[in-house]
Structure formats: structure tokens, C-alpha cells
Amino acid sequence: MLSSVRQVTFSKNLLIQAATGDMPAYQIRTPTTTLPQGVVMAATPGALHSPQQLAEEATRKRELRLMKNREAARECRRKKKEYVKCLENRVAVLENQNKTLIEELKALKDLYCHKAE
Image 1 (cartoon, rainbow, N blue to C red):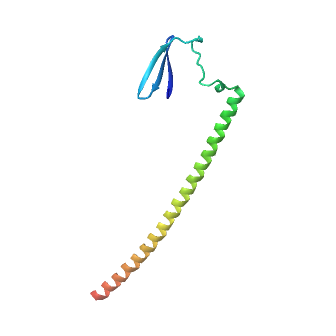
Image 2: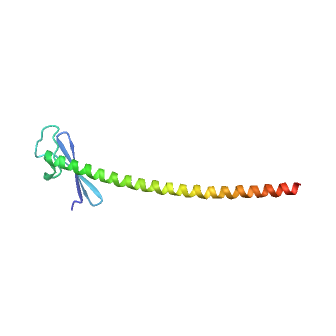
Image 3: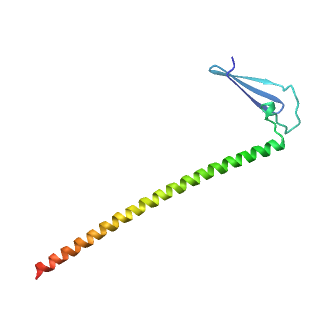
């Protein structure tokens, strides 16, 4: 039983690798069909597409890419809003802390000035 078959072309001969169990087996065969130089056979007969099918596929891929990009942009904007909100909260906390420290400094200065007199 063959688990996988791979063909590699070297000049006019085919090197066929068929993995059987643990040990790969190789065969060198002369191809039965002759194709002009530079012509590549498709893996499946249905793999060849008309220009209209290729255009539809390109359009579908573009739409998919644009949709993914819109979702990524939406997520990026959401994360940015969350980040800005966290920064605003941190600013508010630090402003309150600064205000408290300024009041404490004034109180200590007043206490120090009264003790010095």
C-alpha cells in the first residue's frame, strides 16, 4: 500500500518517490506523454480555470482580504480606545495623588514654620 507518491522530473525521466511504510522507494520512468518544453501539467484536471474564473477568484480573495483588514482595523481602534481610557484614568489618579501630596507638603511647611517661631 502506498501512503504518498511524489513525482520529480529530471530532463526526460521521471523520478517517482513512493513511500511504503518506513522506507521510501524510488523508480525512474520515462514519461508516457511528451509535453512541449516549459509546459506544466496540473495536479488535477479541474485545476485549469478560465479567465473569468480567475478574475472571480481574485475578486473573492480581495474581498476576503478587505474584510479581514476591516476587522483588524476595528480591533486596533478598540484597543487604542481602551489604552487611552487607561491612560486617562492613570492621569486622574496621579493628579489626585499630586494634589494630596501638595496639600501634605503645605501642612508640613506650616507645622515647621510654627515650630521654628
